[in-house]
Amino acid sequence: MPSSLMQADSPQSRNVLILDPANFIGGAELFMLDFLKGAAAHKDITFVVGTTGLEAYVQQVPESVPAHTLFLPRLKSTSISSWFDLFRAVRLLRRFVREKKIDVILSNSVRANVIAALALPKKVRLVWMLHDFTFPIRLMRFLAKKPHKIVCVSRIVQKYFLSATRGKWEDKTEIIPNGVDLGLLQKRSIEKVTLPQKKNDEYWIGNIGRIEPWKGQLYFLKAARRVLSKIPAAYFFVIGSPVDHDPVSKAYYEEIKTYVTKSGLSHKIIFTGYLKNVYPLLSQLDILVHTAVEPEPFGRVIVEGMAFGKTVIASPLGGPAETLEHEKTGLLVDPRDTVLLASTILELCNNPAKRALIGAAALRSVKVSYQQAFVTERLIRCLYSV
View (cartoon, rainbow, N blue to C red):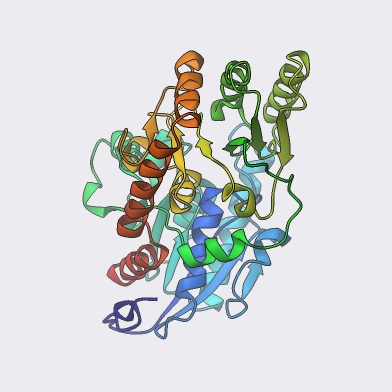
């Protein structure tokens, strides 16, 4: 951790509640866990985590940070019982904040942002984390006066917030992207996991993310079919799983598996499911392909791929266009154009020098803009600024 972080001027010590429902481990949850790993030792801040108790999340919270299971129900505006649950959650959170003498709440999801805003005692400061575009616009507009700071992970997320609130709270916004710990990634990449044995003449191309229609895995597979007709030595990895509570996600997963079976490519396309540690596989990929067909709020996996010096092909929609410089630190290709996507993959497979050049530039970009220590320092200073 930079010495400047440990020496940051602070008017007084602070008790900070990280409010993070974390019903699954996604980019937002990883952002907060990575932040806590670096910030937990800060001498002037005492952190407490409030979450729903998901074991996979709680196990990754630093031992020095107490993790409390709180009542943080999903918000369903059409359900009367949901409104009662919301009122109960607000009441219980307000009591918890007073009992623990919390000075600042850092809320880390739409659900957490809403509950924290409604529960906020007068003398407690509130920082919203905005990771995506799922905050209902009318509700955001109504509650946006409550937080004292709004942290957005990208310019496009900031733009979404400002559009929803008609630019009224621009002075409260700050952009702090996801970060990566380069040393930790390398350490995790050499952990022993079960993987196929990669041969020297093989090309491994991967797509990492939750299995959802907007993540565009079907376009990845359609491009894979074209590539495999030209390069039989290629293997394609679909790394991720559907969302347990989402029937649309599960149906999409079945759809793409059926496509692979009917295409006769089951021996060339590998579904890994959710990987607790994706980095041993990511480190062996030749190309990482991101295929979102809707604007990606940030695209954490893109930065992780760059951190391993990989050539990343990403959708130009949303955050990736902020992270990657086309033809320099990565390639921006609309995944819906599967002909272009396939030809881009083919070109990279046949041009290892280009892959190496782009990968090296990508790693340099990460070192300058996305190192976790820098991200942690900025968020710490944000907590002191409110």
